[in-house]
Image (cartoon, rainbow, N blue to C red):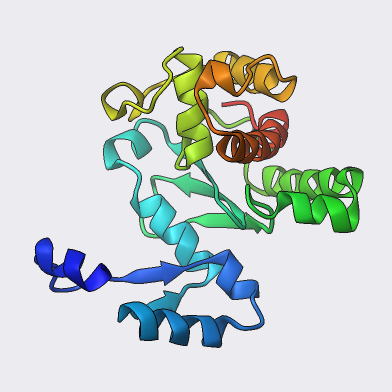
Length: 219
């Protein structure tokens, strides 16, 4: 099927990457060989720094340049990246990677307890804030993940992702914080936001992480 799609869309070159799950997996080499055998695709495991770099690269330059400083966040399946960007240094950035994402958060709760995970997340976020944001900088936050787009949909009261409405949408800190807190307290049900149970649970996990980010960073 993959080769058929490549041929159909005249794909001549590609880059297929794997992130946190494969960085941690003890059988990653076997997995990549199996993917290559079954699909013909070469998969590359990238570092956390490369993942943060690609996340930053996906952001619109015009949005990044609206303020001197930006906080970019990407809540993924197996990790969460936060990036501090200063437009005066276009080719450099600072970042932190948290080993928690929408897919593995429940596993960490089971192994470490929910309270321990919260303490660990808070510790990392506190360190990042103190190092780069302690001078009360004025900055925008840019969400590059499904959690951000889903919360934007809820905030705008639309039941499906419409990129014409959501992409580059600006939402105030207080408004998105209110949306996040309402979802965290289960004021939005699965049916009210038109998500299957599995997707709703992943959104709740992403929202849990985002809630902790909001407590440290006011953009």
